[in-house]
Length: 282
Image (cartoon, rainbow, N blue to C red):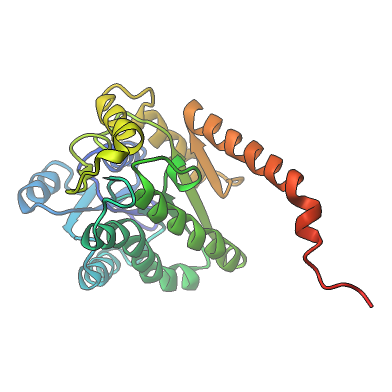
């Protein structure tokens, strides 16, 4: 493949879900994918199937040494990375009081620090090229919080926080940032890809536990089609007029609009008292 004429996409977590759908669609459009997996057998099978069109490497996004090695290997093979997609992640279910320190740290390591370190690793080559795009696969949960998903919310809020600042830093350098905020899509996020905290407290049965059971219960029945989402993401990346945030699906849009309306109401109700906290003028 002539990588001078094609984009090189680096995508974390391509075994299933959005990562898999993005990979399939990008290959069909003639670009090249370097994707990360964690199982050697999956990597071997993928590289055999997609030889010349895509290349899988072993990477755990919790391991900074593996991140740096993977980016360096990609640059050695293809001399560039046009698009980084930080897709790898998982949802941790549990009430805030129930989640222990290690569970909390693991959630932040995968969903926040992994994307942060990968972003830092690709920025030098993108800055030098004065072009590139960084796609952060966040969630509607990165804008609106839900009982049972407090630590997942925290990880995605943090991802969106640094990405929003990043966009203002790198836009003048020709680099785009896209924050994708899916609602419920038919992936394994709520099923086999999720984790539940070990501790259970009965007082949260009617809130966090009920919500977690509901979300787990509709796994495989979500309204969103991940392949259609992948096509839209690629179109936005390749387009000239792209947003900073891209909510995906009717549920995501409705939940975000409801929060904006709630925030506006609170600001309006407390505006006078808030402004009155200023020093009195002499």
